[in-house]
Amino acid sequence: MQTYLSLGRCAAFIAASVLAAEAAKATSLSGRASLLRSLTSGDKLPVSLENIETALLALEKQRGTPGLTNTVTEIHKMVTHMEMMVQQQARLTQETLDQAWSDFTSCQGLYEAASHDLQSVDSLAKDHAKCRLEESSLKIELEACESELTARTSSEVQRKNEFDALNKFPASGFCNHRSNSHEYATVRGYIKHFRDHFASQLNSWESAFNASNTAAQMKLEKARECYGGDQKRDGMGGKDAAYNAKRLDCQKLQVRLEDAACDRIAHRTDCVAYVMCYQSNFKAFFDEGKAKETALLQSQKQHTEYRGLGRIKCVLDAYSKYADGDSLTQSIADCQKGDADQTFVQIELPDKKPGAMPANNTGCLSQNSAEKPGTQAFTQEMYKKLISPDDAVHWDNVKQDVLTCRGRCCASPAEATV
Ligand SMILES: *[C@@H]1O[C@H](CO)[C@@H](O)[C@H](O)[C@H]1NC(C)=O
Ligand SMILES: *[C@@H]1O[C@H](CO)[C@@H](O)[C@H](O)[C@H]1NC(C)=O
Image (cartoon, rainbow, N blue to C red; front, side, top):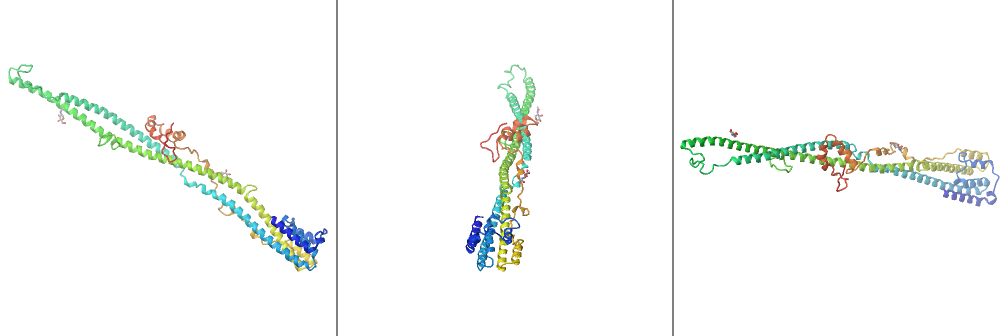
């Protein structure tokens, strides 16, 4: 604007130098002069054009003199230059506005509504709890198997001892019918005794043998049921393996659940950044006195100036054409209605383009609970509440494993409490 003012002053100076001092000091203005004053649709000329107005009034004084043509040419040059400046100003206004808009729309990159699978946390928590209950049941089965195995092991030992007690050859000299505690008169008599005695002995011995065998067999079966073919507690077979496999499955589910919770925290962080950006840039663009309103006001002013300049050119033409008389008066009066092509000082509002307005995603903040895995609140909500209501034993069975935080955002080493 200052440039306009100085240009205006410059024009006034030129006019004054052409006119001589008394013309510049002229106080009585003709009817045309007042027409000149209302060139901008009845309003006063913008401040930036006031001095041009003075120069125009000088034209009126110079009417019918040879110097008029020169003055018209000089003022015309000024006006053309000022028009360019208004255009340049209009471009700057547009650029400033576009930049503010581009800042606003760039918030979009901070947050993608679809980038985090928020629904999965709750459903994973349910799947995980179900898995842990199954794990606990398998643990209970394994423990029952093991306690049965313990009983069968001691039964096996007992039966074996019983068999061992019977599993003895007769003492030497047993067959000697004379040296036995009973004296047998006849060998026949002794043989009968011998046969009777061994018939019952053999039966007990075989029973004990059978019992010991059965006990060993039953222990073996139980050991296989508990531990599989190798009969060892190593997670390779039987109920032991089933429990271990389930436990690993549950651990994997827990990782997925906690990772999903970590995503939710990341989502919240992105969301907060987005909301802050959106709100502050929205204000910067739309609020009173901010980008859009300022641009509109500037544009309004540029319009007035540009139209004023166009009308001044029109007046200059009138002075070139008519030295004086009604034709000049009429032409100047007509200039008041003139409207230059203003399309290039027309501002383009970026928010008015179809689909330009960025989505208002500020609702993303209302996503509830972004508890971090490993915290007491998370454990309570995602584990204890879901696992222990059925049976506190289940919670005890899986607690230690569950309380080891496994997600990617866990503090490490992480052990939570409840
Ligand atoms: C011992 O087991 C065998 C084979 O099963 C059987 O034939 C026999 O009758 C059993 N003996 C006793 C005394 O139980
Ligand atoms: C964005 O939407 C929320 C409701 O979801 C509303 O309260 C807020 O005023 C909106 N903000 C803007 C700038 O449109």
